[in-house]
Length: 315
Image 1: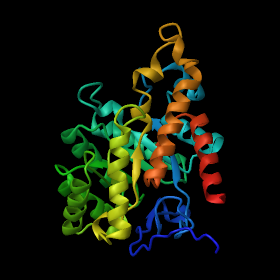
Image 2: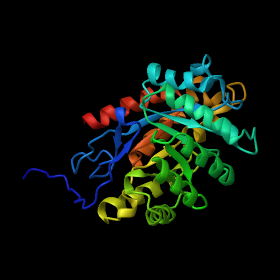
Image 3: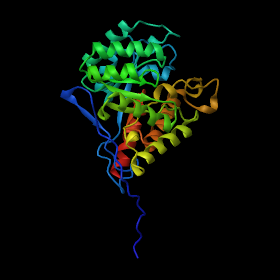
Image 4: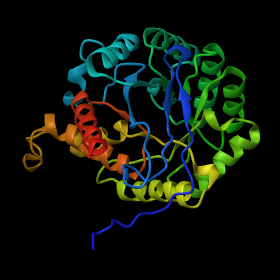
């Protein structure tokens, strides 16, 4: 008797979310099975890779991360163009790190100007991510939403403390929400419910579950994302049936293993390769947990993940 692989029947599906400008619209989501379980359902679109661009030259990156962008670090628009033209980025994630009150505390008006320049320089969808300071992000992202009306930006992080102001701004000026909660499936569901009650349509919501790096709590992040997908696909929980965005690069490249020199830790090997492999391994695990959008940094890590995705889909 021929062996038959046991299969799970999925009753739910991940919502399809349109992103970006109308002329170059991209859709994410649509899965009807667990990640890459193509023998049980459909994954109509491979996960997308967004590459980071910072609003000011970073001062805490290791040399390995700086080298690919050495010629564009002073110009976020040129940086974004290079990521698309040279490294094949499918999306750009503008990190507004300099707005953080604990660092440079740059004003909202400056963030608006940088966002406008980057948006004008590219055709791919643009994610605009704040500094994770609730009060400042609310001020900055609200102003960006108004000044960039109609660009269909993805604005984040939108948290429980800011969802009313930023949800209303996304409705008024036609942007997508990156709903961010601290590594908890119930909190993620609750924020999606709150956004829905506010009137934000489902097609304008992405879920940011908050993630960590390999070796720094990734196994817990994986479990939360796994539970999210189980609830969405097998329990038909409509408030969890949203594509997932993982802002992983900044978590990977801030850990000591990606920064420490070979002289200080010879057993860790070549630092020019170490961070790349840490980023690629983190990204791969998040893909297997259900990520639809990966926010990445190093072009070599991007290339590795693109190869993994192609292999997983092909096989």
